[in-house]
Image (cartoon, rainbow, N blue to C red; front, top):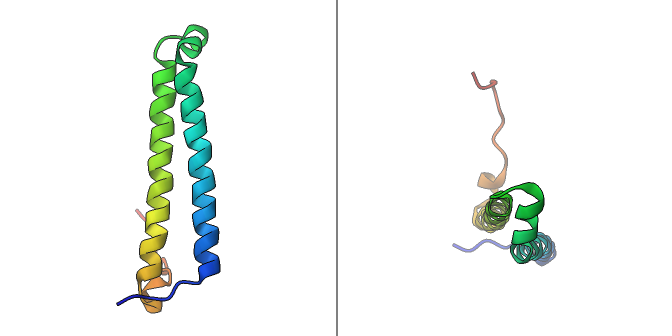
Length: 89
């Protein structure tokens, strides 16, 4: 069963996700191009660490976008947040 998603809401979410993703991809390209200089200035392995962090950030952005799409497919009664009754131990 397919659920209706507000076109405006969907477009805003897609645009925001795309903007964040594009920004991280630009930073990733910049760090990759300047890896030798970054390592010279900040010590060996710094660029590799930054590249891994940026890739993980991209994965998080894509996961958030996918979660939003999946959430929009659910019936309304399942979209409501679950109340927290007790604090975790």
